[in-house]
Length: 356
Image 1 (cartoon, rainbow, N blue to C red):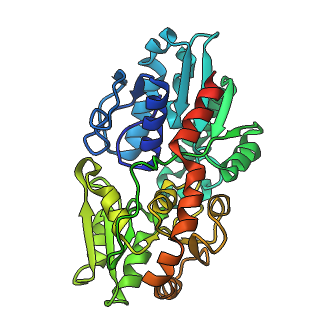
Image 2: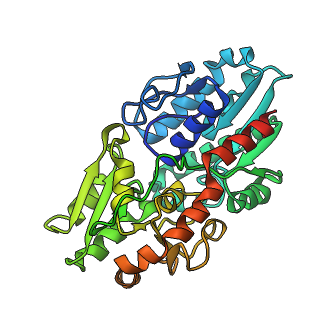
């Protein structure tokens, strides 16, 4: 049970992998054309939509909350339900004796650790309503979480966050990478960014850095629904060394990863990012920031090049200049060795054991 298949992000990919591994049905608020085509991803289970497609963020949140509360009576037919993101409201429609598992990507950040940042973005006259909204949703969320039999999460970083805000223990189940899909192909003359175009991923900083390095090429893979798309397109205008690629149905994605020099991924306080693991699976090192879950995933100085967490433009430029083709080729063996720890086989085995 996932909230929406709206984008081609790591969350949707993870839930799809879980459903396929367990031969499960898959329910969601809706399945958008902007997300993965599940049938083309070899998903054969039942697909259940509990609402209609909607893009307006806060209205979508409210509409889906209603749908999860009142349009999920079918959950009483299932013995085991795994919940993801805001879909946990539908736990109230499960049988008491069913097994209820919550895969917590993070406690809602607009309610907890980043509440003050969200509040700053809200117009002054709407702030009281926003505070009331957050209070009601916080109470509802915490009540729903207590109904779960087990909490899974994606990293030690998020595990600590769950303990801090919810006082609940959880089990870390790292998201996997299908190592059969990613492989080293060659080393062409470009660096690659395939994070979604949003504020938290700081792709705009990467673009600004490469504007100052016209001799270096950057390829940016993006989704049609990415929120910061137009802003970043404008930043890169007239820069012939920066190109943007969108990949319908993700066709050709692994080729771009397998042929780059290195990948660049500099998010803010990431819970868990699959992009760096996918990069390492293709024997490609990662330019990253000195931030939380990074330390759980990579081998010190062997699979990445680290910059300060502020990710200043000059730091990105310096790192790219040091991540030469020759340097990256030296890191190949360590990358694939570390990626093996996040293999799909290990993930599926642990998931099935947990559910059993």
